[in-house]
Image (cartoon, rainbow, N blue to C red; front, top):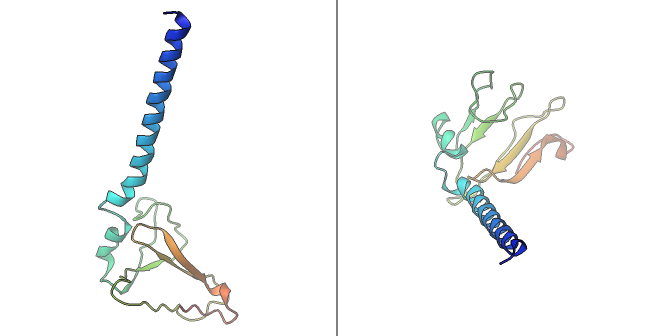
Length: 127
């Protein structure tokens, strides 16, 4: 057997191992959010009961409940379950000079609807 034939076989083996490792890595990255028990929904459970709006504490240098939080942003959350009934959401008051938005997320964190006060002329948010 020649040297080039051995190198070709070794190269094919290395490529096969790298492709298998890449596929396994990709599958694990996609499955981690599905099997994680301590997701954002679970971390919000201690802030209040289901269906009640609770203000999130402001992020500080040493304390952040969630990654990528902005200290200058006031935020509140409401955990809800759409399998039981419909949900009607309404923004509080008019916000002419300030910006306000509502975003709706799945339990796994994917955004499925977002609304801002700039979407209507009167500044009201209601869905």
